[in-house]
Length: 291
Figure 1 (spheres, rainbow, N blue to C red):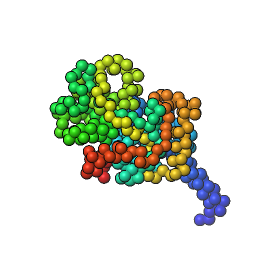
Figure 2 (cartoon, rainbow, N blue to C red):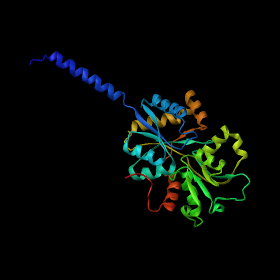
Figure 3 (tube, rainbow, N blue to C red):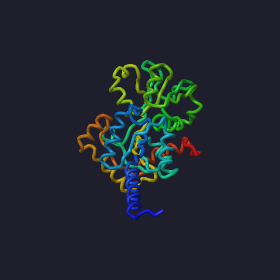
Figure 4 (cartoon, helix red, strand yellow):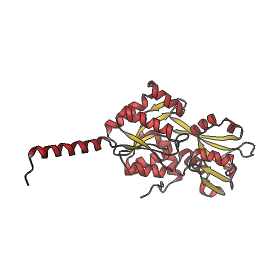
């Protein structure tokens, strides 16, 4: 059968246009777990992701994971993805497979935050170590403020956190840890300072029911990161967009919604304090990621 060159050329052009459109439509993942208040609330996160996507020209969609292990695995298995993770998983993932640090949020003007030890108002205990045999609530076993920080504080007193409490409840989020205290399911909880501050803004009555016992840190704040496959040019665009949010009207509104002041660029070594704690409380290097 004879096929004219003109028809062949037309078919080739049609296929090229279709393939090109598919390539242009590629949408990458922006993965989020328990790092910001209401981190499972799509509207706020999705507005943030749309803003970065539009400003950088790198299309992304928000993906919500149940824990940091799911977040880490997604970034490892999809190396062109971006995410908002915690300092402890970042340290482990950077060492394990070269996860990249993009920027660090500014909370109260600094890229730092604390781990806050909370309990019900009126209890006799004065510090975390006083709750031996009681019930501890934490957000995620890989959370720096929720688990690594209190584990390290007890380790410094020669106490093994895994054997010290009658029950340790993995609540799945800092808000759930707060709820566990309010509901009487837990006696003490370790939560992210930033999440606690934002939670009280929307639930002011809680300040009369719970009390802060200890403030551990400060530690490097929860970072924006990328898988090891994100190219340098896109990384630079994201750095510029994030650090320029304070000067952008839409960016300023998003920052206000999150209760943050902006973003800063920091080196990998900025997370050395968390690496030190991890080495002490997890000397075997196990980080909870799947093989």
